[in-house]
Amino acid sequence: MLSLAGVCAGYGSLRALFDVSLDVKEREAVGVIGPNGAGKTTLMRVISGLIPLSQGEMTFDGVSLPGLPAHRIVTHGIAHIPENRRLFPRLTVEENLRIGAFIPQARRHFADRLAWVYDFFPRLKERRSQPAGTLSGGEQQMCAIGRALMSRPRLLLMDEPSAGLAPLLVRQVFELVGRIRAEGFTVLIVEQNVQQILDVVDRAYLLEVGSIKLSGTSAQLKHNELIRKAYMGL
Amino acid sequence: MDIFLLEAVINGLLLGGVLALLALGLNLIFGVIDVVWIAYADLVMCGMYAVFWLYSGLGWLLPLAFLAAIAIVAVLGVLVHVLIIAPILGSAPINQLLATGGLLYFLQSFATLVFGTDFRNIGVRLPIIEVGDLFISFARLIAFVVALIGAVALYFFLRRTYIGTAIRAIAQDRDIMGLMGVDQRRIYLVTSAIGGALAGLGACLLALQYDVHPFIGNTFGPLIFMVCVLGGLGNMIGGFVASFIVSQIISIGGYYSSVELSYVMAFTLFIVLMFIRPRGILAP
Image (cartoon, rainbow over all chains, first blue to last red):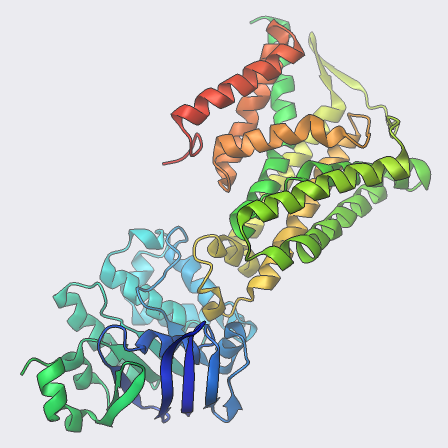
């Protein structure tokens, strides 16, 4: 479904990604793990078109993505939930969801989609006329996911969904990822929380200083000596 | 209550309407594009000339001349963005101020070249309404009501439509708008057109009351900026409230002393408030 081959990217003269190749198949949940500063967020931003890539190829369902601006990439079915949720704090929950349905093909199904999201997250329905900035951390994450789902994506990019959340909420967020998968969405998720993310995804890639160092199924990675020592503290 | 004081209060209220409309336009552009159009009042001047030219010059019906003037200034707004702002959007804010400041002199000189420095009037004489012992200018009353309708229409546009919601969102988090499928450049164009249209509407309302000349922007331009800063730049509700405060000071102050002194009072209050509430009267 999504495939990256030999992708290099960076900010100005600073290179953040080197020769990254990765693919995600339909209905799969794939994780990208790695330490802070490894380039995980850059990778997400390259896929969704916020940062141009300098080399390499990137396709989604046969469509070549490089060169497309971010607002066009959304229309092809990729929704990106940015790090730290980035809700519009002074817009209400429902207005945030409406922005999520900005693209024409989503506007046509706005009412259905909104009902679906409220059904999926009843808490958001209770809070729908509240400014998003007044929500708790967990509710904000629900709102950010809901906003992304409003565009009717097929692939969901999640950047550190557990960042800044209390431990109890972190578990809830990972349960949410499971529920989203059960709905048939394909998920590419970036996390530092290695132990918990490997319980949720089918496969994962280890990204260190901008390159893929390891890849494998969750079970393989969980038993990998390097990952156990460096990322799980075992 | 003193009948003349009451009249001054009502006049202040009526004056505040148009001021509020123009403050909304300037605040909208600042809030969304993060640029201050120094030449905003001069776009109003262009609109007033458009009304004068279409109505008095070409003999169009007044409502048609008004609609055309609004459209012309809306297009001017888009041109200001495309030709002046967009190429320097990423550069230092001072460059944008200087560029739109340059536009101010360009527009004033251009109007002088085309129309000369004569004071022009569209010559529409609207009646004075008598309510009991009160005398109210019908032109001002219309201006007030239409300005309020314009403000309410803008409110519903920003609240109820996708583009309006995106316009409010973009002021809160610019960088992720692309992820929502929103093309920033398009939002900027729409915002510039709306800002221009509001200036055009203001121009129609002012053309009913005042003569137009190339430098009329200088008479109320500073007032619009003062109102916007007083309300907190980019804060549309703050600007709206500040418009009526300032117009009351000018009107009531003018009643107790003179019009000139009332402007001194308004600007003195402005300076004092800038020390007490530097981020605007409604800032949290």
